[in-house]
Length: 544
Image (cartoon, rainbow, N blue to C red; front, side, top):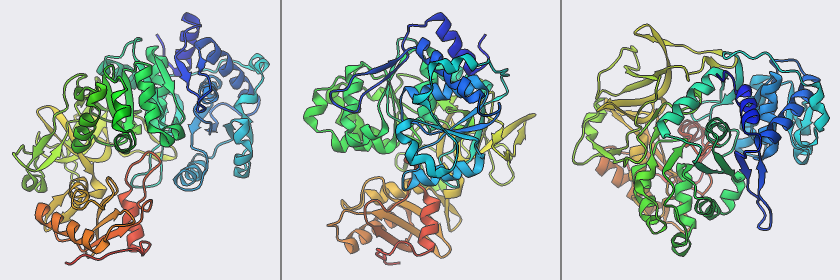
């Protein structure tokens, strides 16, 4: 029985040395695929492990800053082989990536940084010893000595996205990772015949697990692009999905929008997406409007709306907590806004549209509690989501997790709000983002959808709703030619008509101003802080 991630790769290399689970796709049009089979991955990982064991002691943290490719895979498993702890990070490019890199570096106090030779010059100012994975000689493997690994040992640190606070290092054990991989395989009905095409960064939990660990665990193939290749040409990812007959693909919500905007109708008709059986939304809940628009837009390519696969997850549980049933249409549910404001999830003919995130994975306990007293709530009542199970990690690096005991089991508070209805979980947002007006609760995502639809000049998915000491603010990006006075008035009127709320101010800013995490999550808390600090100078005030 496989008890650790290093043992997983060793077993695959021994049983199927020539099988190729990872294929890295070229950025250049005339480039060739770069396959990475189990035997080669094992050989390179042993060499990296030997090099590491000669430099740092077991248990050390190692920053892993490599582009998506064979070097990242070998470095990650090389760390596991050596008994050191890999910490995947983005390169410190200006903006959100640099912020994340420096927060992680300061928090985990690494002994060394693994990168590639082409990135070494960029990373020298960091001030850490550098090991370039692509320059490690094969004979370094002679120094390798298998580390003594126990299932509860730390496998890697996975830093959170930092939606509401600085990223925190989730301590993922080998047992946690294997438990979640096992549960995800069962829920998704994964087999070795599956194929995934991915471009998500490997320093994020969804990218790491779905595009590296799960293919090795379930022995299926993953075809991987660089993240920047998707940004430059989103249609490239779809063409690879069609060409490779992929069965699974995960996208952040903003990426579904990019595909709709930037892939013309004639290109869509040339695709064959009929084999795509699992369309996951990484980093956030599925938006019912986005689902409907994407399904209609890619119907000519054979996309099946039943492929949308709603899930709920987080790094604190490795990646996935709840999931739907493959092939079952994810039908939006309309819930009564008045009841929701009082903490009840109740179906209605009109109201806020929500999508079920399915049922807890095997072995997972998911409970809804009163956010204040932490007492369990019945079905239909909205509260904070708490989780427990073998996938749930023991906490954060240098921080203890506060557990809530329910029925004798310690549950981890998630900071998310949700409710069960008909045995399925509906995730409604973050407790920190909830807006309370006159005693009633309002959900930012619902208000933001209303605002985005109020005027054509409002850029889709860039609205941020948040409370301030004297009221309620709506921040949004606009196109350069938009009449901001007109757009602000339209937003204020729509929000008042739909939600009965009067905005204190509508703040309309230029494109690229609203802050997001590196995984595409809206940072409402950061929007609020910057608003109160007076950072948004290009503003338009709405009538009270």
